[in-house]
Image (cartoon, rainbow, N blue to C red; front, side, top):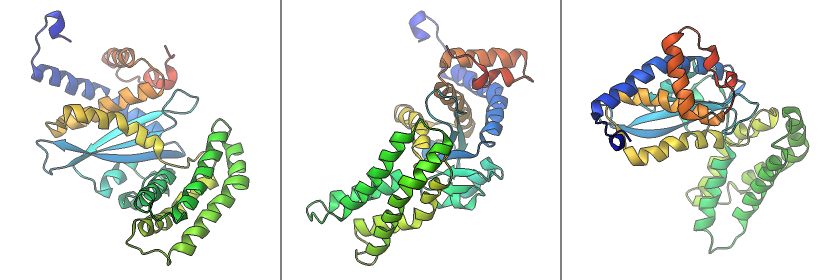
Length: 302
């Protein structure tokens, strides 16, 4: 874009601008983190990243978020956290003793945090979709029973998505809970009937291992049936990674985590990204100790 208007800038200059911008915006990032960790329920996920000059071959971008991925009355925050590791300590350090609910996939590291984990029905469903593809010729119908029950649960969520937390809780108790019990009974009754190393057997084992954490969503209307919020939040980074492939240094990866966080948080709150980032940089240059006006909830949407 600079070249189109006759300005030649070195890659080093532009990289330095990004590093400096991230440094200036990090206090705002930390302010958003404090708000995020005060929420009763959050979502988490992680994805690999190659960093050329990192100690380990594979690094990870962790994502933590709350609210929805579209403008609403909820608190919408998306924060990325870079580590040259996928160890549980990465999540433990970021969460800093967080004891609320956290929607996650089946990765065991999350179980070492203090959060109350809520497992993801979408991940359970994917296991059975995979089994259906393998067992399609057998036409046993076993997988379809599970997929139909899961479809019914999602149908309830679709109908109640605009309702209050209290209404969601009551409707889930009367309509979803019996279906969840039926699903659990099916899994228990077929556990010893299906070869454990078959795709269907693996799907059943995974589901039973996750089931107690999954059915926690019935206990609180503020909880979600799956972790799709985090998966959607991390998707822009995954798409971007296909184009730029890697980060050069750990400092650069850390800077990108801060910048991605503010960009995706702005998008989730319906803000014009360019205008928001420009406003943030101008404000922190003039009033670095007053970040309250930069919180998305305090900015009028365009």
